[in-house]
Length: 478
Ligand SMILES: *[C@@H]1O[C@H](CO)[C@@H](O)[C@H](O)[C@H]1NC(C)=O
Ligand SMILES: *[C@@H]1O[C@H](CO)[C@@H](O)[C@H](O)[C@H]1NC(C)=O
Ligand SMILES: *[C@@H]1O[C@H](CO)[C@@H](O)[C@H](O)[C@H]1NC(C)=O
Ligand SMILES: *[C@@H]1O[C@H](CO)[C@@H](O)[C@H](O)[C@H]1NC(C)=O
Image (cartoon, rainbow, N blue to C red):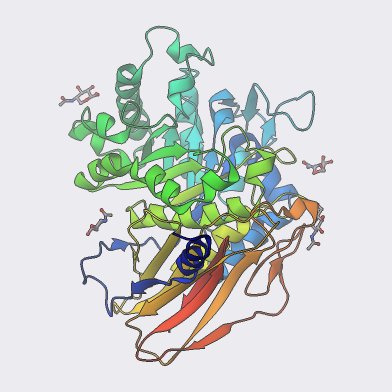
């Protein structure tokens, strides 16, 4: 091919539209449709930080309320993490938590918490998953804490018994002092589920699993295979943790995200086969509090969106994005002073799924271009979300991709765009991210600016939108 021919071919490749047929109703055209939880996206608050998030970080309740305003349901929260297995219950303390750290940015190596910790968690109007200690092998202390939790947290959805047990040998935790491997952990989980569940008199109360290492070595299918009916009655659902990591480009690339989420398919199927839900109980972009150069960027916001949607498409009921140490947390969606980019990804994904009963992916998951559709209670298509995960660093020409939707029934559709200057844009460095022209205010999480809808006329049920590299568009069909 001549140089000119090659250039033309390249240009043609860039402008060629990707096309998605929107099914006229749920359940047809060969797609796989997954039921949606009323509030699939929530947050996980690191155990020792929970009181501060609720009493001393202004943005917390507003950020959660912004999602409630979309869905009508307070987002689910989970309280737990590494410090749940460093924590012991102290019925005599009047403090929420008691610990000391050398620097404010540190997480404590040991801590105690009092009954007020549970009372505070009980003030949250949405569902609460509470992580309690198994690693210290002090089941009486955990049962005492669980009894207060049951009494104080009216929206208690589930209790976790231990966080990421595969790391307890490395962490020199007492329960792992003898032989500790996946087989020992399964037996321990089953034993604790029965003993704690029966002590508090609640069945369907345990969130089992809670590993971070990829399945199947540590995973729900292996655990379920060891559970008899006595254990199973105490398990409400299964959870895994996930931190895919990588560069911004790798993280935000749609096909990479699809591959990552597919790693949970066997465990999801195993949970559904015993009639229980499967959730991502603690997750975010990069482990260990995140990587500033990756987790704080607009690319990570787009990952948060795409990952949430691909997870729900895979029948993962809820996704709890971890919020770690206040003031030392790269992937946090908000902090005391500054918004985090990932909040925008969670917000658009929540807006897309709000009020919907089913979701499907319209793309096969093997390119940079994603399309999702949600359906309402009557089965009619509600919204479509389009994502161009081509990577744009902020310098040089920013390419565009046309997305064509066919099969639409209305003559015009509206859309809101999630955009920024580059995949690398960071709010803490003055970068601006907007959704439908609006931003979330630093320090308060209040939405600000005028909401901007784009409108497009559909001709013969067909409409085409252009998305720049590193951009997403939420299309409202009703
Ligand atoms: C609230 O946060 C500020 C700023 O970090 C800190 O100085 C103060 O001690 C905190 N108060 C409580 C009650 O945690
Ligand atoms: C069920 O499993 C538990 C824990 O794994 C065990 O203690 C119990 O004996 C088993 N019950 C039956 C009926 O097999
Ligand atoms: C999710 O579960 C539904 C049944 O509730 C099923 O029809 C669908 O195929 C599942 N989706 C996937 C991707 O397995
Ligand atoms: C948010 O705060 C950061 C500093 O942390 C600042 O650079 C940025 O301009 C602020 N954004 C807005 C919209 O005020």
